[in-house]
Length: 134
Image 1 (cartoon, rainbow, N blue to C red):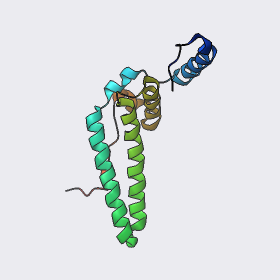
Image 2: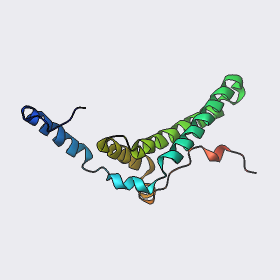
Image 3: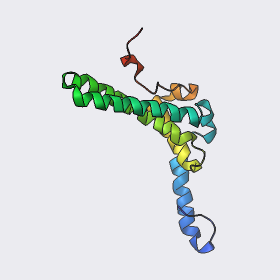
Image 4: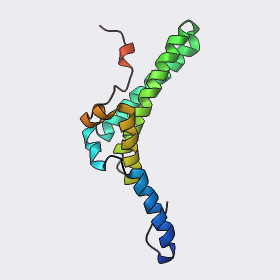
C-alpha cells in the first residue's frame, strides 16, 4: 500500500481509502489494548512450543494409527490455539501497520471473548489438558 494524501490528483481515491479504513476500524480496539497481553518475545516462544508440539503429534500420527483419532483431535486443538496466538502476534508486532494491528486485536477479541480480552487472559499455547498430571 502506497502513501496517501501526498498527491492532490489522488485525493478522491485517498479519501475513499480513508473512509473504508474508518468503517473497518470503527469498532476495533485501540492499539493500546495490546498492552494487556504478553510481549512479542514471549508470544514467539509460546508459538514455537506450539509448533514443536504440533510436529510431534504429526510424527506420532504417522507411526501410530491405533491412536489416530485422538491424535487428530489434539492436532485440531493445537491448531486452534496456534491461530489465537498468531493473531496476538500480529497485534503486538511493532513494525506492522497500526490498522493491521487493530484488526488483529479485533479478531483476537472475537477469538477469546470479551471478558478474556479485556482481562488480558489468553488460553494456553498448548492443549495442556492433554498432558498427564504428575
